Image 1 (tube, rainbow, N blue to C red):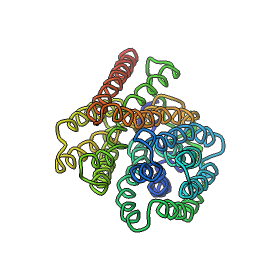
Image 2: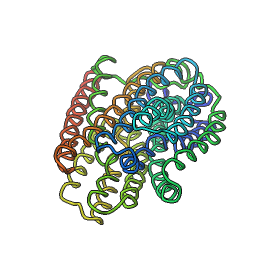
Image 3: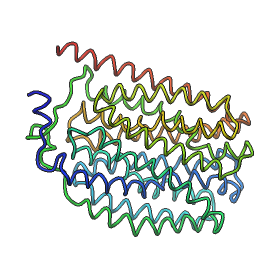
Length: 409
C-alpha cells in the first residue's frame, strides 16, 4: 500500500465534523488549562500569605504537575477503553472542585493537596488524552490537528495570566480561584457533552482510511524510553522561565504585572510556535521538527542570562515562546507515527507524564537553586544542561529513524 492509499479518509476522518471537534477541543483546553497557570500567577501571594520560602511556595506547582502527570496516564488509559467524554466529564468536575477547595485552604499543605489531587488530575484531561483523542480524527493534517489541540494549553497561558492579576488586585487570590472554579464548571461540562461521539472506526489500524505505522529500528519499549528521556530533559529546561518569570520580575523590581505580561507573551508565542510546528511536522516529519524546536529553546534560555532589563526580558520571553511551543506536541505525533493507534492514549499519556514531571522537577529545582544562590542565573544554566540531554536523545532518535529508512530502501 502506498502512502497516498493509506491516507484516504474513512467515515469521520478528516471530515467537517473532525474540524468542528478540533475547535471544541481547543476551546475546552483553553478553559481547562487554567489549572496549570493559575498557581504560577498566585505564587508570590501564596508565599506571602502562608509565610514560606520560595522552594516551599513552588511545591503547589510541583504537586499540580505530579497530579497532571499521573492523570495523563490514568485518563489516557481510560479513553483507550471507553472513549473521551466520560473521563473528561469526571475530570472537569474534579478541576472545578479543586479550585473551590484551594480557595478555602488555611495552610500551604491544604493548598498543595488541592492543587495536586484535584486540580492536577482534573486538568490532565485537556492535554495528553485530548491530543490522543483528536489524533484519531485526522490523517492528512494530523500534525496541524495535534498541535492545534495542544495550543489550547498555551492560549490559556496567554489569557489567564492577563485576566487574573486585575481580579486579584480587586478581590484577592482566593476570590479569583473560586470564581474560576465556578466558571470552569458551567462552561466545561457542556463542551464535554458535545464530544460524546466515539472515534471513527477507520482509526483502527488495518481498516479503510487508517494510516500505516512508519518503520523505525527501535522496539516500542525502547522508543518509549527514548521519548521519556527527551521529554523529561526538554521540560526541566522549559519550566525555568514558565514557572519563575513572575517571581524573577519581582526580584528585579519590575512587579507582578510585568511578569504576568511576560508569561502571557511567552504563551502567545508558544501558540504561534505550536501551530507552525504542526504544518512543519506534516512536511518534514515530527522528529526533525522536534530537533529544530529543542535547539532553538536551548539558545533562547541562554539569552535570559545576560539580558535582564525590562524591555530585554519582554523580547527574550517572546523569543522563548516562539522557540519552545511546538516541542511537546511533536512527541504525540511521533507516538502516532511509530506506534499502534490502539495504544495511543496510554503511550501518549506516558510521554506527556514525562514532560510534566520535567516541568514539576524543574519548577521546584529552580526555586531550590534560587534559595541556595540568591539569584536565578545558576537555575538558567541548570535548564540549559537538561536541554542538552534532550537534544542528545533526539539525535539518537533521528539516527534510528534514518537508519530504518535506509534499510527499507
